[in-house]
Image (spheres, rainbow over the protein chains, first blue to last red):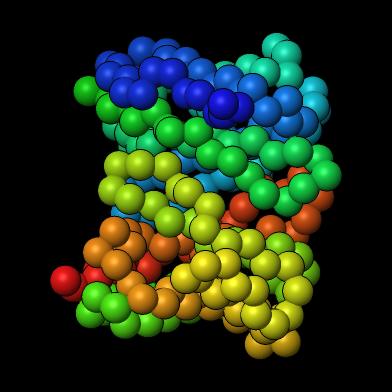
Length: 112
Length: 111
């Protein structure tokens, strides 16, 4: 089945130690999004790619970076994780001709 | 700044009754409206999308949109215990815009 896959599902990292979260999709969608969802809060958009064009939200910290080497894969890099970055990170995809976003299962990040 | 407001609940509804969830949004330019269901520790799952004023029905779910009032609602008929979850309202301005989510309403269906 076509789907959005996120790896790992759970990630534990140390304060200040760089970490990379991965998202892949078999839907061949043009647009890929990264959201951060902290406990009991709404998902918050960090950035998105429209094809290879990167779009950063104004309030996304510089600590967060992203790469999209090809249509199928997108990565979220956190250069120096702080305790406040512990959250669920959600990847979503969308076809340019449609409005619906499809979410992956998420990666729960714990920072020690 | 775009905002989406929901009553956080919890909203408790007896099994078999109608659950009514409400959402308001601040950006009049919003084009597309979504309801997602999120179980604890899981990612959001799309329940309904609606793009024009009026009602849209899909099985036990009905979404209602009133752009003049900047109001979206979700009705769940014949509520089941498995409907117990957090329901997130989300809006977008179209194009490649990301979703702006409300904080969600925690729904509890009492057996």
